[in-house]
Length: 283
Ligand SMILES: [Fe+2]
View (tube, rainbow, N blue to C red):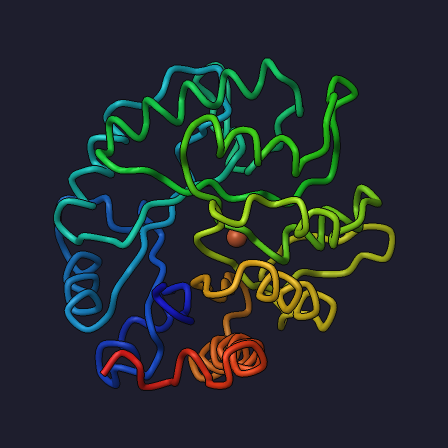
């Protein structure tokens, strides 16, 4: 349990290095640091000296039918050997096919065939990275007519069969539930508790007939309500806030992390009589 943290973004590099703000941990985007040298790696060294980190990728394309990119996996493994993240995660999606990159996190058909395909690839990735990974549920805007199960059945089966963890993006569940008209509570309730290792909290934009996962707004009240449900069901699980556009001052992100901690401590006080995770627990 790393506690409550923030997704590290370029705009906050100097602030974080100069002031060492009181957050529990940082999630870093792996690809930003898969470079030979320079400022990015210096920043990561500085951050890592004071905080635990997890590495979160966007380019694994675990669902694609293209061969896994061995150079990418080797670079990722080398970065992990150097910076010792608590874990490595990426998305349950595909980002391209036929050698073309679509620069988007695209959903899969929820079928037995896709489960077998993805499970085999996660196992290969875990061997190459020398550790288990977490897979994250993505938000989506279309569904495949071929699907034979729900998204939560699909991700649960993959995590079980590949023996990997789940990074549960609470906002993505809310966005997809609205777009596809399913019950977000049912999704949370169906997750295998022992596999949920991390949460993402984020904002989205509301286009009336659909929601778009833009990470450019505060976390919505309905998403906080879903987070509370997740905390009641899964207990102590690490969380971070993701914000990728119109990025606010660091303090606003830290406040979201603190609100998540307060919700967890309120739950913990109710069930055990004492808060589990005071803000100074790193010390
Ligand atoms: Fe996410």
